[in-house]
Image (cartoon, rainbow, N blue to C red):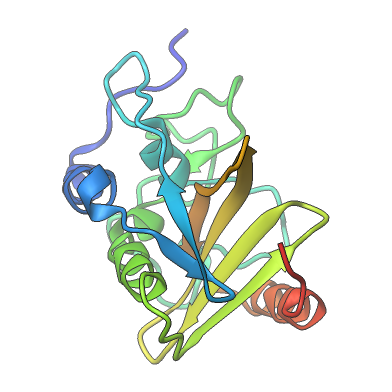
Length: 195
């Protein structure tokens, strides 16, 4: 049994965008946290079918929380969503025995906001961006809140000898009230934490 099947056609545009606008080293300038600059690392590792593992992680969703309103279950369902956050869907590219995840077309279609957030993080101007360091999880969070979207990117702080960098862990739209409250509380709790 295969671990991951081929990407459906509707995901190819976002995959191309990821490979052209997010992954290339020349597109990954240093990002700032608390006025200090850090190198941004994104894994270039690919799976056996040739898909970047970071991309696959960015588009997957783990539909485990019954109380979360996943994007396909909102009042305005996503037209081209085949899986409806159901890991047993015949359209799921992730093997449900190995992964408890399903590909999310809503996440894939909003990768442009990751690029927008990365562009903002290259500067010191943080209008509409909240940043905090969760020292317990060793994760740095950036949350873009504007009229278009509520979008979060999560990075892991990595140290190698005298060098410190951020590794992209995940990025996704925050679309339900429960998650918004959780991230609001995290921000208030950790906004003054330092690395």
